[in-house]
Length: 307
Ligand SMILES: O=C(O)CCC(=O)C(=O)O
Image (tube, rainbow, N blue to C red; front, side, top):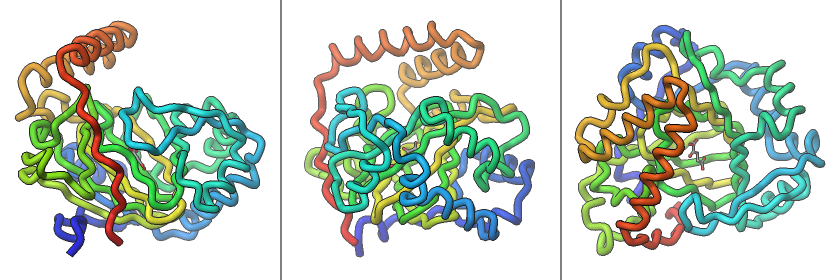
C-alpha cells in the first residue's frame, strides 16, 4: 500500500446538492475539507476552455514569471520570466524544472481577467454570501512535480482541478509540532515520502488525502497544511477568500504553540481591520527574528510519489 492509500480519504460530495448557505454552514464554518464534484456540461466546457493547450493557444504571448520546482523554501525560489505559450509546450513535453504559480495572474494577464469575469469558474455559485478579498491563483504544473507542505494562513481556499490529475495531502491546523514548522507557514517534510529518521514526530500527524480530476474542487479550509503532487501536466484555479461568518484564527489554531497562535492572530486581525502594511511589517519582523534564532532546516527532497 502506498503512503497515500494508508491515509483516510477526504469526504466527496456532489456540488449540485448544495447552495451557498448550506455549503458555508456544512463545511466552511466547520473548517472541514471536502471535495466538490461539478458534473454539469457548463463545468466540463469551462475546464476544457482552460486546458494547458487551450491556454497556450489563447495567451501564447503573455509573459509570466515561473518558479523553480527544486526543494527550497518559498522565499528562496528563483523566478524567471517566460512567454506562456512556449513555456507550456516545454512543460507538456516533460520539462519539470519550473512551474507557474500565477499569483497575480488576474492583474498581469488582463485578457485572462476579462475572460474569467465573463465566464466565472463553476465554484463561483458556492462562494459564501459576504465573501470578500478573493485572491485567485492559476497553477500550471508539469507531470511529477509537487508543491511544498505549507498553509495559506487566514484564508479559505477553493481549489478547482481544471485539467490533469493531482493528489492533495492535507494536515489539520494545530499540528505544528508534528510538521516541524519552518518560518510562519512552511514545513521541510515531504509528506508523500516522509523521512521519519529526521522527522520522527510526523508519524503522529493525521494526514487526509484526495486525488482530483478535472471538474472537482477541494475546499482547503484556513490554516490547513497542504502538499500537492501532479501526476499529469496539470492546471488548477485556486481562490482564497475571507467571508462574513468565517471561523476566527484563534479558534482554528487551538492547540498550536501559544506564542505562534497569539502572533498569528494579531497579524490576521491587523490585516482584517485594514492595517495591511503594519501586519506585513509585523510578519517580516517576526520572520527575521525567527530566521536568526532558528537554524535553517534543509527541506526533504521532492522524492516522487509511488504510483
Ligand atoms: O496545486 C499546488 O501545487 C499547490 C496549491 C496550493 O498550494 C494552493 O492552492 O494554496
